[in-house]
Image (cartoon, rainbow, N blue to C red; front, side):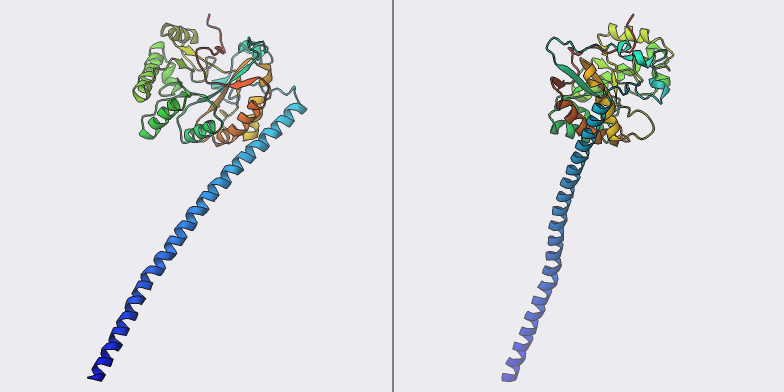
Length: 321
């Protein structure tokens, strides 16, 4: 009997060791996985913060560089037509030396002595729209988005976010296909009406502001642009061109520093400045330039960044006559 009891005790001890071993086999890997998960999460957050600080530092360096170059060379001409390498944005027959007058610009003689700057983004929404909105929110700045028609749910959420965050939602065209839009007044009106109704169904906003694809001075329309302008007047719609171009419409790469320089070099010459930029998946440098651009503008005396409203001066490339 004693031998039997001893054998049972040995068996029980062995069973306890096996159970402890099994628990260790389960607990140790789980603990390692938990520790690695926490570590990865922490490192991911730190990496995001570092990237954000790097973007901000780079934008600040670009802004300082631009301001230094501007002060050193105040007569540099950066007032070329938007997308100078793209014939769609060429102002036919207009001497760039007289472009300020042609685009309706004027000396700073505002009633309140405040320079008004309007940041406008064409062609969105895109995969970059969220980043643009995040930056605008960080600086508490409102902008204007001249959008096209995109029915995917991910883009519908962006249309709504533009409105919900207090920006101006405006129309560019539904299809952005020049050969279709500019075939006739009827084709233009059909495209714009489709976009207007789509945006109303998506956001509840009945848009009344628009920008012609390529601007009112585009060289590809088969219709006299004055006819399209007359149509907008009949529909109680207002169109806005621009008097400052970021230069980001060109197909070639443009750095964030050059974008800031293009937008700010001659900004002090204007009472009301409408800046043209683009919201597209391939315009990362535009997004990267935005913090530095905003900081540069905000550092200017008596200057405000505003969204387009009924009170905004209509900047037109061609006369309405």
